[in-house]
Image (cartoon, rainbow, N blue to C red; front, side):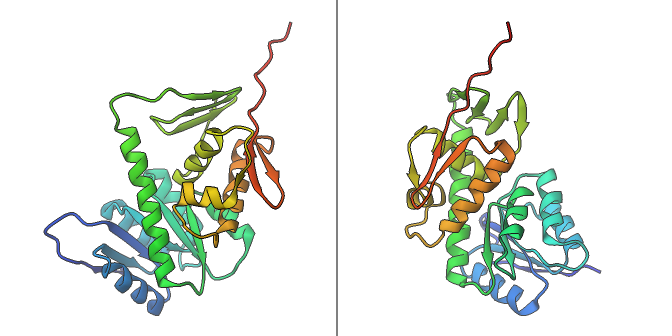
Length: 248
């Protein structure tokens, strides 16, 4: 039995496709109606297994994904969906638990919000995610490939959006990639959380500083703890890794 519904707006032109995965009907309906009012094509699923199947056929541009779901949870949904096709994911969590947030970022989520949340903020976050994805698509489609950023054993291929460290490829979410590029653009320079929020997340206010902190922690877990330095009360700086040395 498919626990999925569709809310379509006019189908004459391609619309931004949003998959909402939420098992609480009241929340799912409210979110779907709000996103449909933005002119987006919205599908709603209420369980994890159905969401994976629907994502495969619907090919959403962005996913709003609750952590707690029947069948398989949102973390496993995110893991399975990202394994098939990279797509920006905003996770919803019922508790302000940093461990849950870090796990979500680790399996491929790009952002998260804690319930209860503002519908207006949700729309703003999703639009920011879509803008970042639009920038990445434009960058990857340019005819002249940008030279790779090489810092010691860290290599960032901006054209292919691939990152390797110590010759091993590291999977980063679109947001993690943008954050790393922003830090690499000014090595050893301390960038405030507010500057990073504006540059990477397109946020005009400083209400999401914990989002920056959580993404930095996710980068450290994937790339090593030595790469990004914390300047307490200010922000973060990228410390270029040392060049590998040849044994005599």
